[in-house]
Length: 181
Image (cartoon, rainbow, N blue to C red; front, top):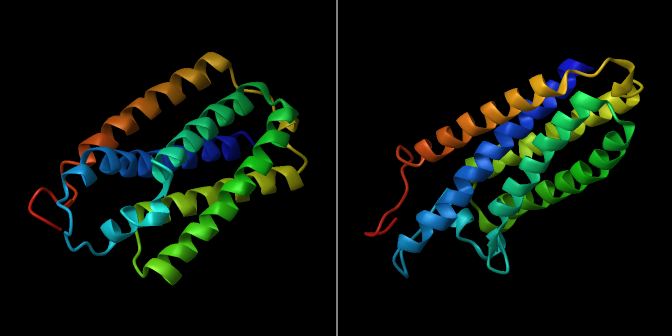
């Protein structure tokens, strides 16, 4: 069970990377795209009317979601508190249903795919799968918890390195700049 929870944390970190990249695109690339630029592919998805709740990019909400999943996963691993399992399951179930809706919007409405959005949808699906598997195997409490200092130090370091990677990736992605898409 401990390996599954570690897997949960790793998958949440991958979701975090995808959401962090998308959030950075919303903040630093989209404002530079001239009005009327012809966008296609992922940028069509990222700039669509469905990519926001009010002024907030869905990617930013996703980033907050994944940071919460990373923290809850670390807490789960270090405490094995069954309350965490009970809280996580409905939260990721809602995330999964939302991801299904977002995938439908990409394929059925917008007609374009955003690879980072699909990574996020896959991550949420895997998170829910891990939780369901652990639940139906009797819960994580059947294994001893992992020392908190090891869990939190590792999770912090890995999340910071992945954040640096996500920001660096913006320098190599084929993003539109000033002159169009």
